[in-house]
Image 1 (spheres, rainbow, N blue to C red):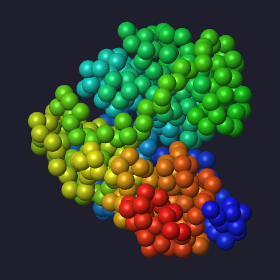
Image 2 (cartoon, helix red, strand yellow):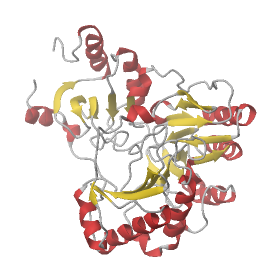
Image 3 (cartoon, rainbow, N blue to C red):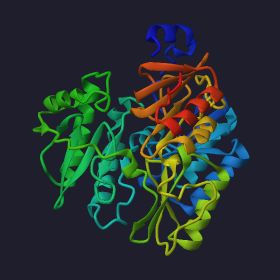
Length: 419
């Protein structure tokens, strides 16, 4: 095993990257190595086929044709020039993909159970709850002071089990028409969804007023403090075994005429989005349901959809791989990621997951993976059972060395065998 100090000394790319602390939004494009990127967050995570066709056309004509499906169920279009990025909000608002007021647009951001209204096991008042919370957030101008990454969720459970949606403040169905607000490690009393939405907004106000610098999702103890500040009764959240991310990333038939296809590593082309929209409008109900697990769910289908480039096989190793955009699109990345991840996919044993990160930030998958590869100035570092910022146990000089090691892994069951 390599000495961590020695590896870090040789592997110059292990210096911490710049953390911007915010996410791009409709009125906040971000400059990247491949141009400006813009982001849209469809209402309730649902994209009409006509909207999808429009976004695909814009991505091809004004961007570089690359589209990302983020872990917040947003679509990210890449490769714009500065003028096109500035004009994009007008196009999106006209298409019903955002609000014209920048502050309101930013505040309405939240995750909602993707199958609300489609999955009989999802709480029937999930959409009503989401609308209640969205209205409260849009009207709460003071919450514009929340950090850009601060997130809300409305979790109706069902096929996507309660707890799969991750956010700083969540309103979660408890069954029988009752809901609880969840923040950090605390869970509020069971109340109506309208009351739970009010409590969620109150906790957010407390976060702003207390000048907290760490979000509840990063430090669960912050939730306890926010409950105290608001005088809200609560109890420690009973956490059973955390549902695996793979549960959300399932593909194939979901029942009730619903079929899910995966966007490999959350990266698709404009042509793939066009094809998804075409399937939705010709074979289904015309709606693309975006999930935070890099999948798109089609409804009203009688047979499995087929879209070139999408993953339909529930056993595909591509469902167990995460990768960021890499050096071709990010100035902070030190190596190729998506291409390397794809080449390693056939070498992964069953149930093993892999994250390939262009830097120490680990944007594509902040959580731990069985194996994480981190690109740096001198090659790729290997982290076991950890994230991109974890302990580096081995250093590979280049992609070929990584591939060779994983070939050994496939046959001998240890990625460092023979090193």
